Length: 245
Image 1 (cartoon, rainbow, N blue to C red):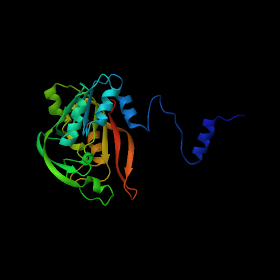
Image 2: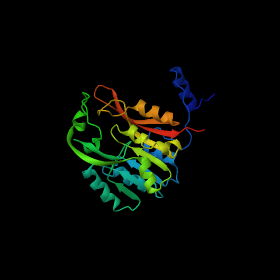
Image 3: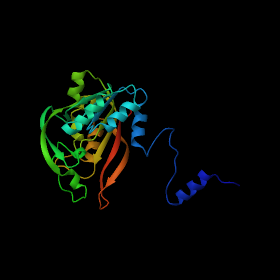
Image 4: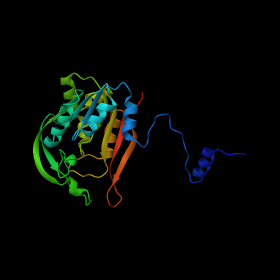
């Protein structure tokens, strides 16, 4: 009797306590970008990117989602200049030269040696080789907005996809979106999550997950794990979705 390849593989994995399971069509556990777009759906019309850096992902969102308006927030002047240049070639990109947090106002923004690692939070030493990239080289004052206040002013009732890369400021961003989250007005959240506190006062994965659980959102999956030279998990990306019911 011939045994199928799949059955044979399952028997082998079963010997070690594992069970193979086929994924639904289109589900991606190896490609976070493809998965967030799958979850957002073809009809996505509103994307918010917090921490847009130089606009490289912003451009991709606009290209992959031809019906969407992409609101891209970036406070660092040198990065925003690049983002603004991209927006000039794509009218569906709305560049916003502001940071996003839990309160509206002005705040010190700590510029890192690697611009993309800049943050509202002062960097701290972790003993990791990547400390040289997060090291502070300057400070600039920036305008800060909340997602709730921005959406109220712009008359945006909901967000199809929220992407965050804020170097530990993700929890404050979510707190500033309390009204949106309360009504499940954000359909997909794709965010960087930290497992090491690389900035003073920044948030960790369990704090973000705990807050979202309080407002009835749950973890969908974790992607793109990064470790320091000692093998310790430092950061990754995660997708969260509103709980059903």
